[in-house]
Length: 509
Image 1 (cartoon, rainbow, N blue to C red):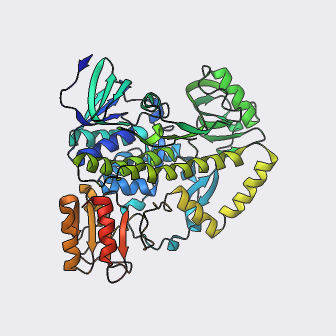
Image 2 (cartoon, rainbow, N blue to C red):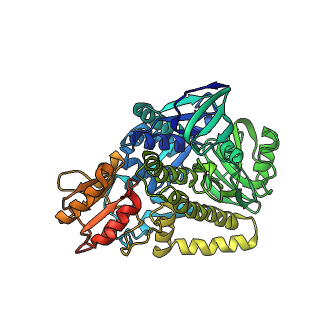
Image 3 (tube, rainbow, N blue to C red):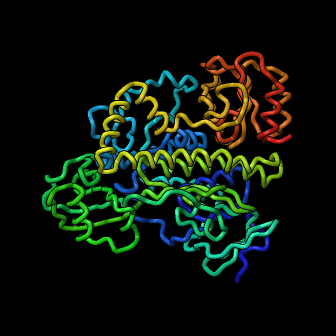
């Protein structure tokens, strides 16, 4: 085998999807050398384009891209497709502004009580952003190249050897060496399988279909989401259809998806004799929900679908994976740079594993009330009544949009472990903009010399900001991790001992 370099990369990433690309950018912000290996020679795919590639970004995701200066680029790129996006997203065509759905049960923005989110401030990251995967990847590729990330396409990982000092990766007849390897190579991750990660969970109940067709009699299908006695289908004119068949996942990747088969399934699910005259595109999926028991094994880590898979219902997968990348990037960079506390990298798995476990259960719960059974329909009716209440809509908005996300970081203040409010500072900048360097921040609203001295302990790993914001939310000081989550906060006179402990935990001594 040819050796790529006698000097290993700091990090080799398998997979050039959004998760791998975002992680690569995070690592380059810290000055690390990064190689991304991607199995596909061509990044283009119809499934990444509209309508099937459409994804809604959650609040943690929009906050993450805002904090790295990518939100404006994503919004600008998708603005050119706004008409096509509205056509593809049937929920955007409703009279009331939708806030999300649970198993197809819609809830609306005017029912959501945002006043309950006491530690949120107005921010560009509150925007409802829908973007297709092709557009998102193009923005991330441009940023990655701009930062100096090396991307090699047509290089699928086929062998891995791990030692105490490095990981040797074989791909497409070449050998690459890295100090760390991160598998971002999807639900059928080769990195995960070769490295022997345990991947446990529940088997599928359904086969889902995403199809683009031409219909002889489109009037026989009702637009929007429809539950029937035999399943569920969603129809957006002229010919975009998603449907679920509760067959135990029997058809997924077992046989070719033919026009005849799709028509038979559609007729059975829709309870009509609708006729398909042309099958332009078809893909299948299931609700199989599995998760790696840990995201770190020696010098190999997992992120995104390589670490967890579930049904695409609710569009949580992309957001979950980007959250992994945001959480992992600065921790891995600090570990490689040599100033991380001993257990910093362990916190990646400890923090992100419970988040994914909740999403998997959220997916399972949606499948449970979608079953074509009388008991499931009864649960669906009760859930619909709950969602129509103000408290119910607020709860589901918190879960679906990710506002309820909180890491268990200890600490006495209720803000610890939550996303930092986007404070508007009097110099015209915001906390989100201040986080673009991927460093931590100590916000000292009362400009105390003692806190400034404390901040100096961590050198250039954090930025000390002594400035009162437009709205301080009753806070006196806040210590923010590079990913934008609060490590310590106080309302009045600062507890500097607790601040010092929090800082040492995340930034070392």
